[in-house]
Image (cartoon, rainbow, N blue to C red; front, top):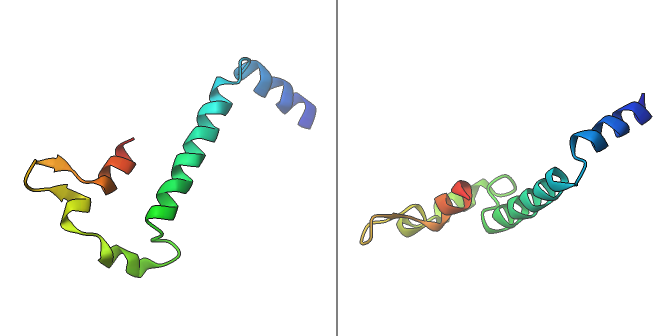
Length: 70
């Protein structure tokens, strides 16, 4: 069964693009978790500033939501 799954995975992602996207996404997720370690330390949520959420003077999203969006 393991060999069959491996063969099907190679056919599904023949050029490795999906694997690269997953690796890139996991790296970005790790960066997010490092910057916003809410799972390990929920008190960090209280340290978010208004600008982290929404920049009132420019009307743009703050850095926190930019991480989530991208």
